[in-house]
Image 1 (tube, rainbow, N blue to C red):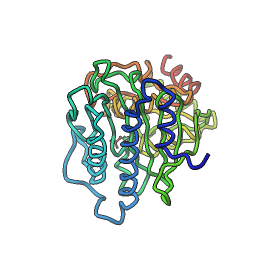
Image 2: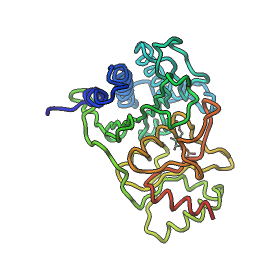
Image 3: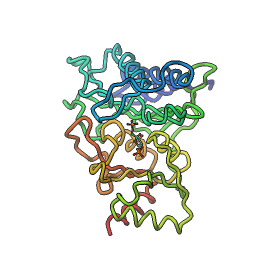
Length: 317
Ligand code: FBP
């Protein structure tokens, strides 16, 4: 069988699906994995090269842009820019979507958070890249509901570099083997286990809706442990492997939630559902939400299906 690299896996997966057997889709996904290998190299050299700290710029979210945010953003733009089948790219770091190819050739829209958790860079804590792919053939642009995604994934740059992706045929995980510079298959068809672990920034406890406070109080008697990395990609990856539930509810500072619907919540929701889990905004499934703006925010509750249901019961009372 030999080494199953992500590129081989993508091509083998796609050849099974008539709509994507042309190879165009594989070519696009391989562009994203190439970009993530290049970003991984930058992250690994973060403390050594002059790429830590801020650029002095502020992005549309009012956040200080880190040098690595900027580098990761440019790498993804470069690797997607010459694919020939990408019509629009949209990034957390850019105010507006970038139209690359107006015509029919530009079939796909790629939305991404080039470096999630960038507040962790200077302390060498895990960061990641999150991506979502939409098809323009139905006439939509970047503002399509999550249920229209044709692919989604993330890469976590942690103790090892791990990529997980889905094209609607389950969630598959790959580890970057630095000795060959390729993502190698680690696990296929991952499912979220039930785990007594919650990830939420409890420092905002008083600011959370009552249902979340009641749920958190309840967990204290249920033997739960808390894990919070300050990076959605790292908390979600841990959840895919060890189970449990992650939540970033609405707060006084973020009355609509902090996380962005199109390039944070939607891809995580697609992966969670493909791994047998659930993702909601506390009320409705994330993937059913109709986006109205590129950088719109949403509350996010995601995890093992029964544990999400438990939280929702507290929210409903
Ligand atoms: P960016 O770093 O991409 O802006 O993402 C936002 C984020 O860092 C999430 O990854 C994380 O879950 C959350 O913010 C942490 O927020 P807080 O510091 O308020 O707990």
